[in-house]
Structure formats: structure tokens, C-alpha cells
Amino acid sequence: MPDVVRTLDQPASRRFGYWQNALSNAFVPLEISAPGPAQGGFRGRLRGVDLGVLRLYEVRAEAHLARRTPQLVTSAPAGCYKIGLQLRGPAQLAQDGRQARLGPGDFALYDTDRPYSLRFEETHSTLVLVFPRERLGLPEDQVARLTATRVPGAAGLGALVRPFLVQVASVLDSVDTRAGVRLADNVLDLLGTVLAERLDCVPADASSAHRGLMLRITAYVEQHLGQADLTPGQIAAAHHVSSRQLHKLFHAQGTTVSGWIRE
Image 1 (cartoon, one colour):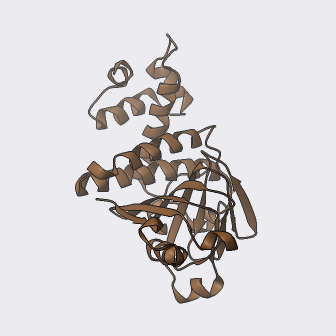
Image 2 (cartoon, helix red, strand yellow; image 1 turned 90 degrees about the horizontal axis):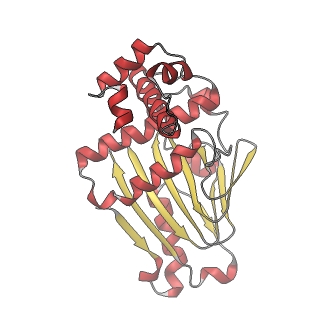
């Protein structure tokens, strides 16, 4: 079952301190500040669950600033990446000399072992994913080029991320341990595929690359279902693979290309 933290469960005078501790315990040690008038009766809610190596949190809170300082990085390294997906309200992420302004549907990646800051200027809702850096399956020196860069949620493969993660968050109450591990694999494969596309490279793990290719293919099919001439040949050509390779990918999933389209 997901863990839930609510500041409203605390007396008004203790709410902001409670929120500071909750965020540092859930993610990594952070410095948290908020506008003076907000600290007395701060409203925040944190809902999180472990899915194998992936931790997923839904954060709803009033305006505040979270900073991962050089001192905190040195004293408490974590070796993780975080993905922040905005659901409501704006956010501003800064890391490695870059700043990303995120609106609802946008997401960005950041590294827990380098200083960063996250500013929320108003009441907001965010999905946050935390996972070991090596699990992304991409070269770390290449991924460093993507920190604090906005991935728009309304175009390209980025458009797959928001509905998928929102759906994952909606079923957390009913996911058992084994299903949670498989679900985490799917989430990380999708993220690896989206980020690999932005880097113009492929995931280091071959099985991850195949799963990423399947995600791209099935997304393409869904986007073109209205076309009467949608064929395996067209789908293969759009993804620069042979028809034989396309059929092998679907066979490994226990189905066929035509059968999947019909379904």
C-alpha cells in the first residue's frame, strides 16, 4: 500500500517542519524553504510507493523551494536520477547551469549527486520518480547533457509519458509486488526510450532496446489506427526495421502485428 504523509495531520505550527522532514526522508536530504506567510499553516501531501528499484511519489503542495546543496551531495550521495512530471502548476528546475520551466504535462530529469534546485511558485501537483542511475541503461556522460532540460508532454514520444505515468499512479493501491516490479521495468524502458531519442542513441541493454522499440511501434500504431492502409510493411518502414524483425518482435509478445492492430 502507498505511504501517505499529510501536513494537515499536524498542528499548524509544526506543519512546515514536518514537510521538510518528509521530503528529505522520501527523496534525498534537501533544504526546503517557503514564503514566510505560508510556513505557519503549510499544506502538503506526499503519496509514495516502491515498485522494485523504482520509487514513485505524487506530491501536492503549496509554493516552496527545494535545494540540493553541494554540502548535502557530499554528505549524502544517493546515485539516483529523478524524473519530475508536472501535473498541475508551473515548476522551475535548475541544474548544471541550465534551467527548465515546466508546465503541466512536461517533465525533466535531474541527478541527485549534483546540486540542483526546484522552485514551485504556487500550489502544484507533481509525479516524481526516483531510480538508480545504472537502471536507465544509457551512458551517464550522455545523460548529463539532459539534466534540467524540458521534455514537452504534448509532442513526440514525450506525449506517451504523461498518460502512462498518471495511469500507473492511479493503480498503486492495487498493484502487488511482482506486478510492481514488472510495471517499474515498463516505466523505465519508456523513459529510457524517450531520453535515448533525445540523445540520438540506443539503450545499452539489448532487451531494453527491444522493449523500447515495441513501445515506439505500438504508439505509432495507435496514432495511425484510422488509416485503412495501415500494414506491417508500413509500420516496419516507419521504424527502419525489416518486416521479418517486426513480426519477431510481436511474436515474442505472444501475438501478431495484425492481431494487435485488430485488438
